[in-house]
Image (cartoon, rainbow, N blue to C red):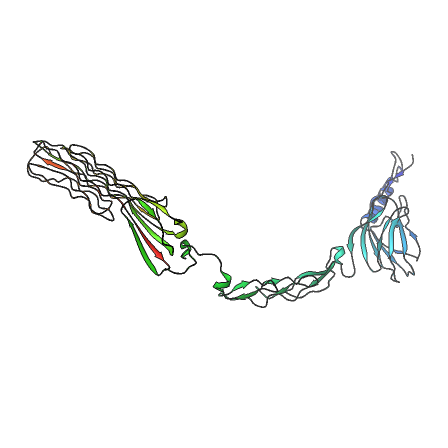
Length: 452
């Protein structure tokens, strides 16, 4: 039978049963010679100053099977080098003299031009020879993925000064800001690093510069109170004005107000009433105080005006074991609120529970009111050893004082000032009942800080 040959490297393929006793020679040629040529063979080929067709032999050494082809000789014109139309990689080197390129191509296809003094990886795809990796003896151009430079400035950076042209900038100062150079120029560093007391100022007509902060030119807007400012552009306050509300109404701020402090206290709760008895001491507790709220507000917060509500006083617990009424909520719009205190429970021989203070309201500082004093009772009439409960004190008033009785009944005392609780009633050894003391109404105080 007849041997065949591989299509790409032209290795001899023996038929079954062929070359008995000599097949080893053919195998050694395939593996030890031809494959070595294809993988690592380096061949110097005289170009001959004409079109050169590389030899391509079946089962024997040739030119086209080598991996590296170094073309030599003098040339007076550019010429083609023809390779077989089978897939193959080549590293082609143009070592010819005369300065002319050679083009590695197939007989009927296109190829790759290799300048004198350069090397290129090329490969045949079965039809044409195309470019692989580029190797150059000179500077690798930008178009080939290089920089086109052989050196640069230490500490500099590269920049395009034209399409396809890179250049090195001057050395950039350590820690300096870098300024764009614009078209045709490389970046440059700023001359100044600035200081700890300067900031960078923009310049529409040129490079930015460092300089001290100019409050007139560099700062805009109004610094709010929450950030340490006044929230106003009209200057610091020079006059302090106060508006006090003991009844509901409308708060209209002074036209020159910058900011104000709003204080509210809710109404105080009433003291409890108590039952009587000939053989016992009956006591009731005191009413709770209204909550206290305080906030700082600007003219912007207030606007043209705000409704002011004064929390009503908690009613006194009526005669008998009756609870006192709760105080009302004081407020300035929805900005600041202060709930009222709770009325005390009705009393008897077991005493009475004081009313709770008003719950914390809405404010920068929101404090709940104090609770009224609870009081005990006794099933034994006689010496007035146990008084009724005191009403709770507020920030603006004193609670009603607890009462003592001896063979009589004494009504609880009313609170004084604003937002305080009423005291509880007491009855000792008589059937006569006693009422509690009334709480006091709330209060709103607005202190204005004005520019004029």
